[in-house]
Amino acid sequence: MGGNRSDAAPLTFTYVDLIQAMDNATDWVRANDIQPAGLPTSYDATPPSNIDVIVIDRQYGNAEDPFCDQAWATSGTSGGIMGLTTCNSINSSNQCQSADVRYNNNWTFDVGTSAERHLACHENGHAIGLKHPVSSAEMFGQGCMNFGTGEVNYTSHDRGHIAAAF
Ligand SMILES: [Zn+2]
Image 1: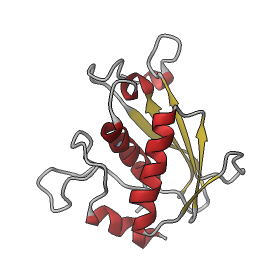
Image 2: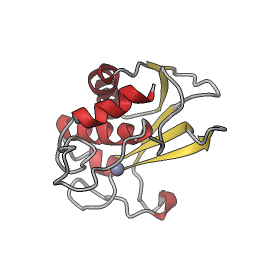
Image 3: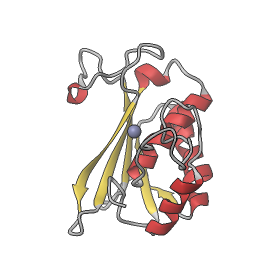
């Protein structure tokens, strides 16, 4: 395991002024992907100091917000980065104490519900420690961690990792 996986279950989320579509997409992924894999989640609008996942969305990459100097998408069809998940603090066991999930609204404004769920599934997957498939040919299948598939679920392999981690 490792990666960005948060260190606690239940996993407490807070959302920082998400647009309604991404609020909905994140709720959907918690209810339909993360919790059924065996990891309970909760939401706290006033995050405690030990918050696990902070979900943020902005129009990253615009001139006034070149966050981390990444190659952010500027529209739904421009190419570039649609989301980013980082660990912002690590505990004494080198597990992620708290992850930041960021959605790029330059992209989300232009896509539909299924794509929004695909992005939320992928980025929150990183927050719980999932990585990209190493190759498309491997046994792990597709699923939302293979970005671009449009899938909105984790593979059975991914779900096994989630269940084993807590
Ligand atoms: Zn990724």
